[in-house]
Structure formats: structure tokens, C-alpha cells
Image (cartoon, rainbow, N blue to C red; front, side, top):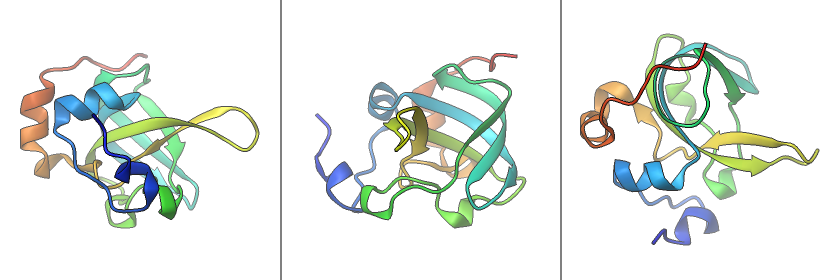
Length: 125
């Protein structure tokens, strides 16, 4: 069961990778290609969950109260990340994906996650 602390305030609970995979709608490995104040562009190499293309854009900033968005220190061109993102309805009624900042991390620091997640698959073209 997921703790309500995930959404109450920015005191995230780090979940084991397999549990996080079942909870989040997107889980992928990608390299930051570029970053602006509102959008992060990734070159995706592996996908564990979600319909993601090789070049994938997503909002870079979220809500501090809800712990979503990327930690700014990770959004550096060339950084390879394991991203766990959830679907959120925007103010315009469409849906966007935001990462949970404490679950998303550098791939080099996520060896245990990678073991738990397994091989995954290549992104869609």
C-alpha cells in the first residue's frame, strides 16, 4: 500500500523499484538532451512502463507541495536518469506526466532499481 505521505507534502517515501513500477504510469531510462524552465527532453534507451518514444518531452517543473517535478540538479544535459512519473490532469483538462522527484534518480546510482526492473524494452519509434 502506498503511503499518503507521497501526496500530503514533500516528504517522499522511496519505494522499491518493483512497487514503484506498479504505482507509476511511466518508468523509463533516458539521457537529458535539453532542459528549459518548463520542459525536459530525453533520449530514451529503455522502457519498463508506458508508451514512450525514443525522443520524449515532459514537463520539468511540478509542484513542491506534491513532490513532483525533477530535482534541478538532475536536469543537466548528458545525465542519464531512471524516471518514475505519474499522470496528472492539467488545468486545461489534458493529462501530463510528472516525475516524483525523490524516486527519479541518476542511472549510475540506481543499480538496485535496474536489477529489480529487469531488461525492459526499447522505446517506440
